[in-house]
Image (tube, rainbow, N blue to C red; front, side):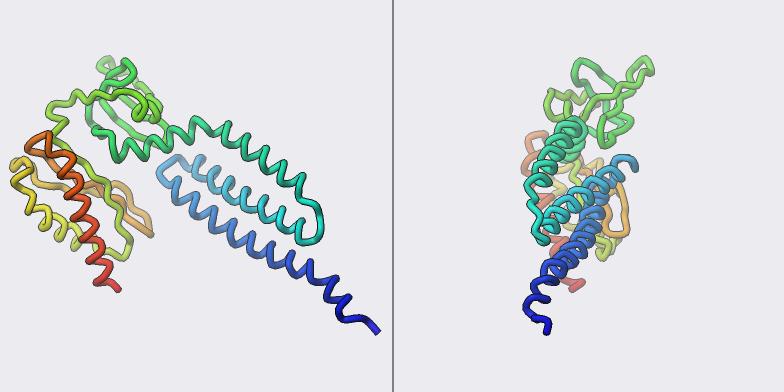
Length: 252
C-alpha cells in the first residue's frame, strides 16, 4: 500500500514550483507594463528595452525561488543575478542619469521649448526636450545636443526676454476626470490669485501628453513680481491638489 505521506512529500515541491512559476509570469507581465508606462515618453526602443529588463529581472528572481523550492542550492544563481545587476547599472548609468534628470528639469528648471538658453558654454533655442537630451538650435543653424543631466548639474541661463515671469507647473489627471470641467474649475480657482499675476496674460492649461490611463498637462502662470515665484508655486499646487481631491470625491 502506498504511503500517502510519501506521495505528498514527493509532490509538495512541485506544487510550490507550479505556484511560483504562475506568480512569476503574472508579476513579470505587470512589471513589464509598469516599466513601459514609466518610459512612455522615451523612444520605443528604450521603452521596449525597459519592459524586457523589468520582466527579465522578475523571471530571474522567480527562477531562483523555483530552484530553491525543488531543493536546488540557488547560491550560484543569486551570484549571477548580482553580477548581472551590477553590469546593467554600470551599462545604463548615463542613460538613467539623463532620464532621471529630465524628470527634475521638467519640474524645477525654468525653461521650455522655444526659450533661448546658455549651458556648458553653448547657447541656442530649445527645439526639443527628449528622454536623453535637450536639443538646441544655435544662431548659425547648428543642432546642439546637451545631455539632460547637465541641466541639473550645471548652471543654466535662460536668456529669453522676461523669462522670469513664466511659471510652469506639470499636472497629471486620471482618465476618469473630465478635462473641460477640470480646466474650468481650475481657472476659476486661480482667478483668486490675479492680483499676483500679470493681468495681460491669463493662466493657461495645455495638454502635453495623453494615454488611455491619464492626461499630462502643463499649467502656465505669468508672474507680476519675480519674488512671488515660490509662494505662487506652493499656492497653485495646493489648489490643484484640492481640486483633484474634490473631483475624485464626486466620482466616488
